[in-house]
Length: 100
Image (cartoon, rainbow, N blue to C red; front, side, top):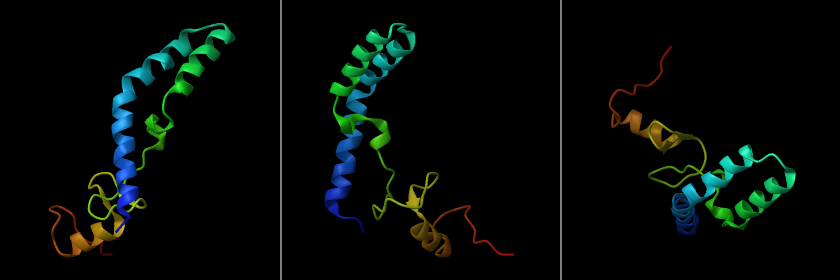
């Protein structure tokens, strides 16, 4: 189980990203349209003034049940070892164990 503080930090980042999503999108469009370099720098300064944790690249996908940050499957929202345990217990419909 991940530390509670790390999970809360990730939730805070998700809220910030949703809050600043539209504000962040409009200057990015302006940068592509602006031709002089000085204009691009001014627009980039606006983007840099936004909170760092509001950037979507800082979000990290975590396991739904344990909060583990690695080996997550997008389809299920679970980490690899939790997914494997659930498949073995037949808790996920349609998922089967591999055999060859």
